[in-house]
Length: 253
Image (tube, rainbow, N blue to C red; front, top):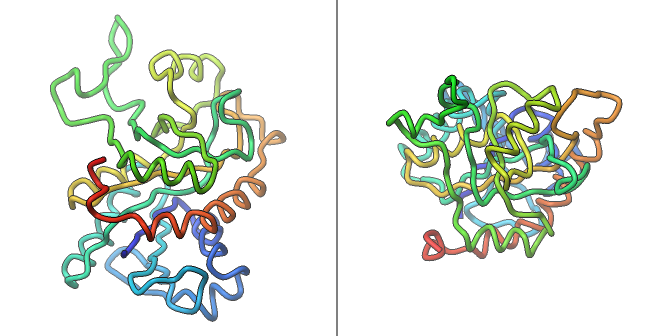
């Protein structure tokens, strides 16, 4: 298995890397090798790490927002394909806002649907997703068997993870999003972009998020970013064997 893990920013990437190495220092000096590509840099796990496989992991800080995340992920996927060593799986990972009470601070959510929440048009009758305008898609669905494996390994709650271009900052918008997406557990800014790039290359996608703050009014004093990053590290430590035991015939289940 070759697995590409795409986060938004380096601090999330490093939280994932600690699942393999234990400390940020080991990531920099012993285990992760920087691989420069046009427009992006991969951190390739190459040293001795728990549950390591010949395929291994490439970690990518893809950037903030769906557009940059899609472009960076596509660059990595294209480079791998041109090298004759395509990825078997792409994982969008990081921290996120959670919809209370289903996704409390510090909890994990795994997407069984990755949905672009604000891709469409506002009309006098309300919001219309782009699909109702006759274009594209707004939802990608990770393999069900893989979602089940993640739930079993990490205790993450499965549900819809929304991708937004503008982070929710009011109770009214949070309520509107839940009304349109009643199964939504979290919102972030990259998952749909990563999924679009993966789909273009025919590679399955997964999204795993640790909740750092509630969706709604932005109260920085209530954020628990450190706790969420620690939860992300712990999750990947538990998740690695499940990812590596997942086989291609499971992809459509």
